[in-house]
Each structure stands twice: as C-alpha cells, then as structure tokens.
Image 1 (cartoon, helix red, strand yellow):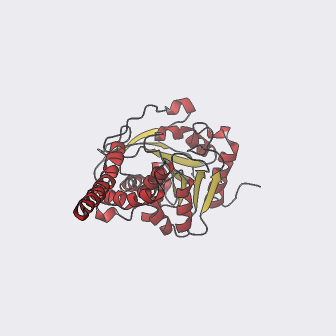
Image 2: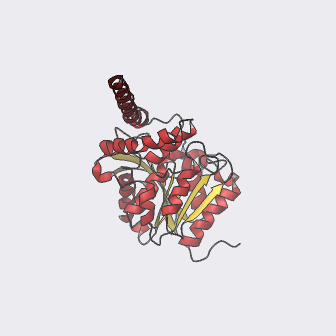
Image 3: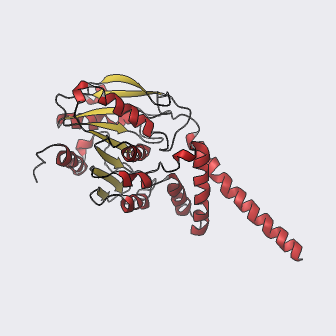
Length: 309
C-alpha cells in the first residue's frame, strides 16, 4: 500500500510539473511565434498628417517600417510604438498631429514582427529595445534633431519596449508609457489568477514562465524587463499611465513598476477599463483630460515655459 501511495504521489507531482512547464510554451508560443498582421491600420492622409516613409535596420539586421512627422525647430521628437497584437503604430497619427501642433516631431516605428517590419517572432520586450535603438540612432544622425531630446512613447508591448529602452539607453531623454506589463512572468501569473486559477498554483507557474523566456530569448536577456529597467531611469522624466479596471494588463503591473521607479516618475491611474487609457485613441483631442495630461508632461519637461494652470 505504501508503494502504491508513493507511486501515485510521484505520478501526480510529476504530471503537475510537466503541465506547469508546458503551459508557458503553449500559451506564450501561440502569441509570439508568428509575425503579427494587423486587421486594421490607418493612413496618415486621413488625419491630415504629412509624413516621410522610412526603413531602418536594427543591430540584429531586421528591416523595420517607420514614418517621420517633422516640424520646424522641434522641442523634442517622440518615438511612438504600438501594441503586441493591437493597435498598430498607425493608430498614433492623431497623436502625431496633436504633437506637431504643439511643436513636437514624431517618429512612428512598427516594431519587429509587426505589420511590414521584418521578424519571425515577437520579442516580448526582450528584443524590441533594439528597434528603439535603431530609431534613436537614425534621429541622432539627422542634423535637424541635433541637441533635440528624444522621448519614447509606447502602448501595451510598445510601453514595455519603451521602458526597457530607457533603462538601457541613457541617450533617450524621457518616457511615456500606457498599459505596460511589469514582466511577462508577472502578467502571466496575474492572468492565471484572475481567470480563476488558485493563487498558489498561479504563483507556482511563475518560475516556469521565467525559464521559458530565458530559453526563448537567452540568458543574457533575463534582466530586460520593465520592473528591472525602470530603476535605471535616473533623473529623466517619465509618465506611466494605466486604467484602474484594465482587464488586459491589470493595475498590479503599474504598482510593481511604481515600487521600482525613482520617486520623481509620474504615475496616472484613470478610472475605467480602457486599456489605452484614452477614450478615443485615434482622435486624442476628443479626450481633453488625457490630452492635457500628456501635453503638460511634455511642456513641463521639454520646454522652459510650462502650460498655464
């Protein structure tokens, strides 16, 4: 009887370990192992924006699609990044128009494995910082942006890439992020728990998710996640935004980031469940509270004359 009990216990434990180990492979793999083709993209002409089409090459030799929205004598240039599966960075045309009206140039970058940009897999933030680096290098080589600060602004996975890039590249002058996760392992664990999995099992899954990402992206990349990289912000300005009832990326992620961030970083939690925070992301002017929050951040940090109260 003792042998049977031990054998049964061993079977249960080993089966549980196998399930825990294979779940990140199945779930994460289904999200990232193929390029993302967006169901909806947007044309700049619809928003009255004049752009220059560009292609960039990353340090690991991927060709990326990008667009530049120039302004005369820019106060700053904002690199914009879209989400994991939605939205495309082309959803930022309304922001580019808004920024241009206030003296800020924009650089829209479609990250690797998204849209027309090359890449066989999504990097979950472990690799996309190289995309930001390619954009930063291009801007630094342009005489029109000499001594102009570069701000990186991303939503969802783009927010993750933005935070990681700021942590890795001190040449970046500032950060705006919306709906970023603190780490893929943290997000995975959160979603398991909120889907009804007992907390103890969800927590047991976390190290297996970390092992999966190490196996997928390499041991040397293990520290490239937002909760780690936000600590490298230094004195640079940052604005991180999140919706209180966000069902895609829970508010817990922002709270973890806040624990690691320098005290001067700004955090804005907005009531509601809109993942992108803005009530009309395509036309941000339709959400004056959101618009004023971002413009005030830019004016306070990248001009000598802040917006009036």
